[in-house]
Image 1 (cartoon, one colour):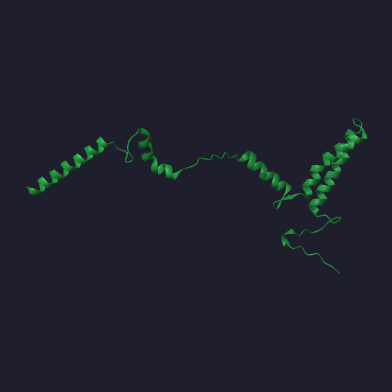
Image 2 (tube, one colour; image 1 turned 180 degrees about the vertical axis):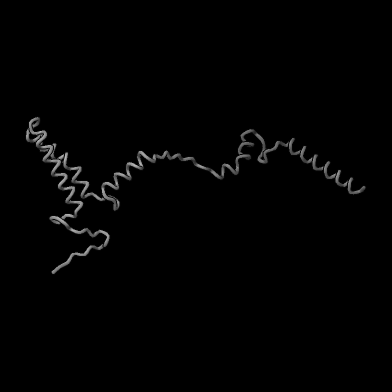
Length: 146
């Protein structure tokens, strides 16, 4: 006697009717009902070949709902997740690159573009700053002597 054991215990489903789980059986019966209903409703309007295609295409979504699993979700769970993602919580992702090196070097780059030396000040500005520092140091010396 052989007993089948799934490698993954979470994949186990109990067979209820004809080797199908209750879910699969319910959707199979629903698909058959849709096919039979569409056959009797559309028989006066279409030929047999067209009618058979209409029955198959009408029943296929209901049959798929019972058997399809995607990323561990049933078809309804997947459809609800897709609906929420697409319509209820749409997100517009915007990519804005951030260049830290450029931000750190921006003053130097802008100074070079204006034609100033790398320090960002002209030679005249540096000379004025040096003169101001000398005056400040002289004033401190004078105050210290008093």
